[in-house]
Length: 146
Image (cartoon, rainbow, N blue to C red; front, side, top):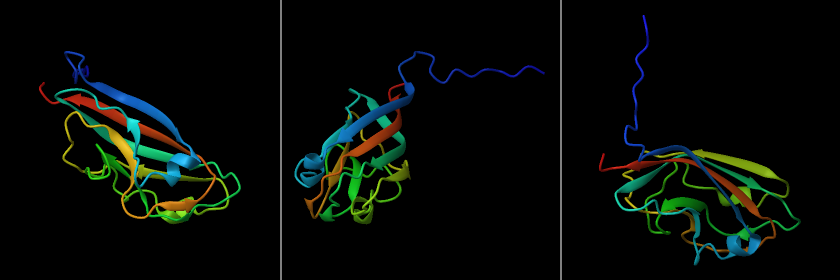
């Protein structure tokens, strides 16, 4: 018996298996409460980003972060819907004194059309810290008009 092949993207408007790599500097981590960092650019009209996974690596550089709330992954800005199931990176991860890694999977969420995916701190800013954060986002772009 032959297996049938189903073409999920007949018009080639969807993009599956995309990867975005972003390094967030220590200065940017310290400013995340007021200045979210774009991880994936808005995909255009009638398209949504479906986040499958976010992986973050703390590259410890000598001074741990102090204070600060969780870094959340959201659509649009710090007021958008969360795109991962974990509630973001806990502040204890950023307060580590050695290299560390964090993995979050995509959430069941009503995706926001034409919205970027950002990293943001929604409440308390970090006060010190020198370690960059390397973030990899695995995602798909879906055309919602198909």
